[in-house]
Length: 295
Image (cartoon, rainbow, N blue to C red):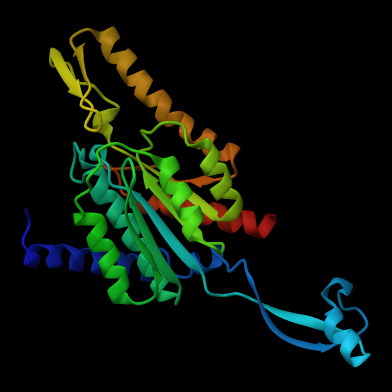
């Protein structure tokens, strides 16, 4: 159990690291690819030739006898929601970072990008149920609280229920938001709530993968235990065919995720605990920018 001083040091290091990335690698890109999608009513003014007929305010027109239209301006402020998997499988890490630590770094990057652009940021932590909801708000202190919770929150549940988290998010968010869903996606079917969330929000899925889940070394008979269910599986890793079947099963599941997300119009960014995540995020921003420019 880390003491308060160690926790503050870790959060501060993470803040400095991600702020540096925002200033260099991602300067300006966040705002360009996540534009405000809403419209705010500003005023009514007299109708002029060429104005959109559908914008006519019929109540004011009837009251004054002259045609008036409603004028709107684009809503620039965004709401960013971080939906983070804190189930037991996130504690796994065969290299420098656990999946949960990597999730926290990426969440920190998006949280401070939001704060830098005067956007609101909120958070949902989930396991097999929603563990914590932090309503969207502004400010550095608020962002730091979110990062602290992602790193150090101790969940009561061990399993993963992504559908439950998405349903809860759809209930609490009345307006369109940019949603980053970060998980290893080792979960039962969640296609229906994903479909609903993707229609309502700008949803980006971020699968987090550890190489230890993809490569099985030859170390004889090994008991694999599911961190979430406690289920055990004995595999003879000296048998090459067993190692291949195991790796193919896991690799196939993870490989299908981008196709699965595209089916619902959801962008995805796959991150690995053994690789620098900056190139993957940069590719994501570049692809989004290109799509916006070319339709």
